Image (cartoon, rainbow, N blue to C red; front, side, top):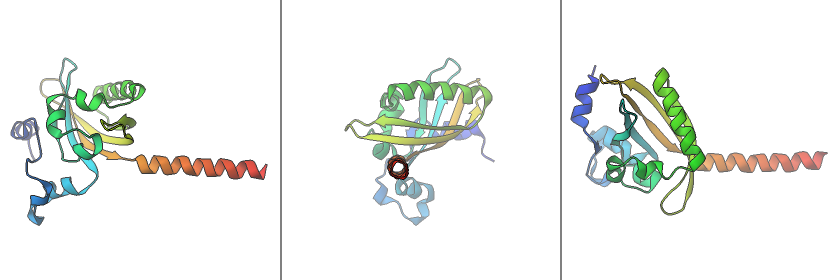
Length: 166
């Protein structure tokens, strides 16, 4: 078993690798996976005084958020400010509940990336308490925009069919 504090100190505040994704071979396991799936692997820490910071971000950060892992590691607001304002408030409240109860964080929200593209994201992470009383969540963020758009189209078709039947 890996000791959390040891793994965190070895990881530091850094992205998985500075190497381009094309440079990974089959033996590079997680690094290759990190470059191959439309998902962001992450760890975020909430300190005892309530401040949040990313301590790990995978390469999917660029594609999902339109910001580099380095930008997000420097300042969590580079990602948080992309959230639709009402979703940002709901996300922060849900994180507080997750931290208090040490329960899984499972949340869907909307962002508008720096290029103006609207996206629906799904974040799932599990919290652990740190020795100093903070909380660290480790998890994944996935783009669910296509699924949400398809669901909306199906609802519209169903509504049209129901109105024809009446």
